[in-house]
Image (tube, rainbow, N blue to C red):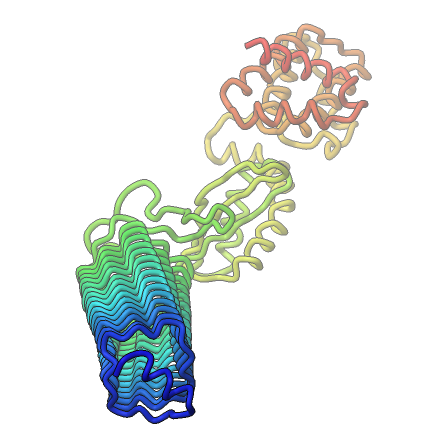
Length: 577
């Protein structure tokens, strides 16, 4: 039938054109709403820009037809043949295409939202940038299909065959892909948030940079798949197969990998913080530099796995054999400010073979203790000894020390898990009294250790010594040379043991006391005090920093005092250097 005859009959009100032959006819832009073309032969027809919404097109042959921009909303195209047809930007919303043949068809930017393509054949179809939101594609054949940038939000692809299909940057949020075949499919950068991929076949799938947050892949097979840099937050991989999969730098935070098989997989620099690895198989897996922060490893198989550089801060480990793990060192803490692991363990060497299993760093606890002033190290050591004695089997080791803008941070490691906050507070509370006791008894302690005991205890706060006792001790010394030596040793000891804000006060009290008793030792001021400050600053960079800081925060009274002037003179000498 030719074009004019057909249009005349349609204009006359005829709607039933079943099994009509309009092959090759040009009907571009015509309005054929509610027409019945069941079984018609429309091979090579031109229906671009035509309107065929709510039409009956069951079993129609549209092979190589031009259907660009055609409106086919709510039309029935079940069992129709659209192979090789051009449906670019066609409107197929709510259309039914059950068992339709769309092999090699072009549907670039077409809209198939809410349509039904159950059992349809779409091999090598081009659906680039197409909309298939809420579309039914149950059991559909989509081998080597091009779905680049397509939107398949909440689409149902249960049992669909997407082998070797291209889904780069596609949006499959909330999509159902249960038991689908995605072997060698390319989902680079795709969005699969909350998608259901239960028991999907994903051998050698490409999911680099894909977002699978909250997705379900229980029982799915991703063996040898490439998931580099993928987002797998709270993703479920229960009983999934990830043998030899590339999971480098993936985000598996709080994911569920219960009974998953990751044998030989690459998990280098992967973030498994909070992940569940109960009964999981990670034998021969590469976990170098991975984050296992608060991860749950229960009956996890790690035979032959490489854990070198892992961060195991607060991980939970039960019934895990570590004798056959490869590991040179681990990190036991994490710096959340700089977002990197810290506290290498062991700090100055590598593990011996099997040592990780014998010496479990995860059972230790790092305790940060923050001081507002530079600590007195002798008093600090005795404080830790006292705390150890109060708790049987507790061992405390100083792990590190660093100067911060307004404080000094001491890192102490306990040999077993403790409440870090309470332990830190206990150390800080015990330190002042221990320091006071030590300073008062320091001469006795040095004597017991067969060390030189100064005539004057350099570290004792001069206020604590009754003036009468000191006066007697000094006045009884008639030999000025002896007095000079004693006072020099006293001052040198103070300068060695105290920080600027302390020794300025202590030495000034001593000088005031000497002046009060008619003793003027002007040479002592230059030879002992200035020289002692400069020499210590040259040996101790931290002391030098504290010295410069004192100059900035000292009170006017301290700055104009005799001792203050001497300190500032020493600082000037250091600046000249």
